[in-house]
Image (cartoon, rainbow, N blue to C red):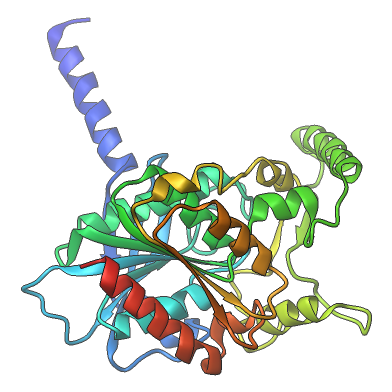
Length: 347
């Protein structure tokens, strides 16, 4: 190969690399309040942004900031992760907006394979890639002129909570971590809610998933399962009813997700252990917010017991798991708590 050809190949490789990782764009004016499941704040500006994670998947996000933000200063920033099978237009966006009202620059994004983000096939769950999405979001915020790259925190809601813990353990740029109604998706898929699934049942599920992978590889129709049932009956639990009320009614139903996901994804989720090295996050602080009545509270309690100081478990009286997503009477407690936590630890 002659020198000229070598230079052309190298240049092409560098160009390709720059396209795959680190490129972003701001798409002003492309998202309206009608697309959100909550009222857009009069005091906050929202911009639609697109950036790529390290494997080249385009991530779609909403960046929030106060309208009166001082553009001559750099500000603390928070990445907010959505629920499992959720999208950024739901509770993660609401939390991002509320924290922007408090003075933070915030970013709510759709995980790879979900919502407006890229990735094929659609609606699959690969924990390692979801963790990479959070780290890529930190990459993105670190390059913004209004953001102090040394003051970035993570907030994860429900399933997003386990992912922010995992991301923070391997990204020391993250200075503080908080979760709301955290759900350990790995334990939930291995053992079921309340640890009700036996080892034998888990093995049968993995047998089934193996058969499905073979069939789907041959070209047979993919098998999906719903994260939230399409309908409920009198026999459903209060917990199921609460999820239904959030995802299946005008309260927060959104056209970008019907909560369906590939059943094959459950194998990768079973292999997800978000708290395996949670103690290494120390001395960076951790805050776990849970509802007093939440059936998922034991996930946060388990994480809290394994984490090293500084850490805090904040219990919201009377609240269930889903109550903390958007109920005003509970957010009037949780948002000030998050505000003080991040302001204290993102100084």
